[in-house]
Length: 194
Image 1 (tube, rainbow, N blue to C red):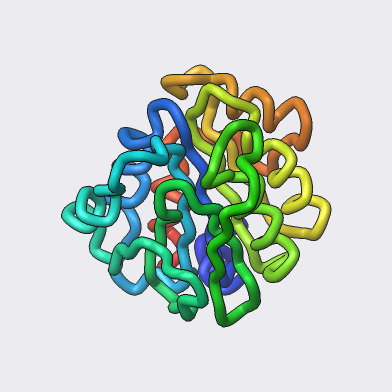
Image 2 (image 1 turned 90 degrees about the vertical axis):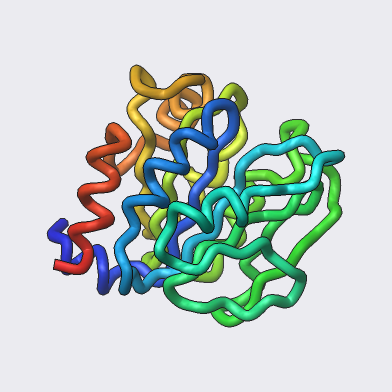
């Protein structure tokens, strides 16, 4: 897949992370270039009783707009949207996001599986899913559906991940289109404009 293919093929990128995810996301989001077209949706496992500082934290290092999701929020290209604490983030349609307080999935709300599965159902082949470091199996089932519906799945190399359980679980259940170190992911995402 060439860089041009990445830019034209994907309308959305979904990213899931848990333990060690703040550091990994910083590297990844800092690398996104101005003019990056796909919408980016992120679930980082965070404690439900703490206010999220993720938009402020990553807004300082990412050249794209960084927001916390609101229910029925319009989807905009070239924007990074984080799931808020204690809410599942879902892609409702090609135009709209939704929030849910349904039961936690694998002890997590927001759940990576919920985001990945809803995005896969909407975007199918136009979706890229990226699973990063984490200490749970959340995201594995979602990655499987992404691939089943024709989307692409990148998994962080387990040997590089601060917590390897999440990438290892996804690889065991769903496999991947690419197993990459963070810098390799950054290079591929940056190359999408060339």
